[in-house]
Image 1 (cartoon, rainbow, N blue to C red):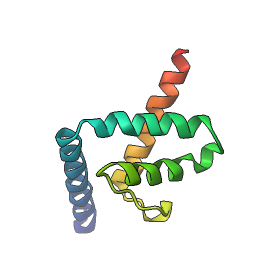
Image 2: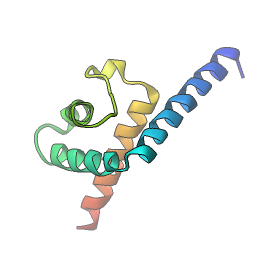
Image 3: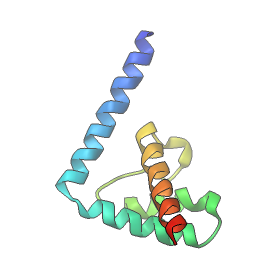
Image 4: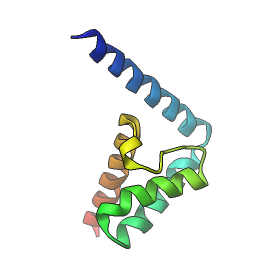
Length: 94
């Protein structure tokens, strides 16, 4: 494994650790994020939903996700992807 690959992995792990710490400090973030995701995936263009979700999460919680999807970190992308999966699985149950 190359040094740059190791550095990238360490950076992503550290970012995820910081994010998980925020969730543990304020568990409401998860509930708020899921509510936001449900609303945005049910309205408007699904391809634009991630950007709208990121913006509203940043506006209403202590989690900051850049407005521009090009600036999303690996952890940002993973969190938004997981929100989408959870919402999709919820909808499949109904």
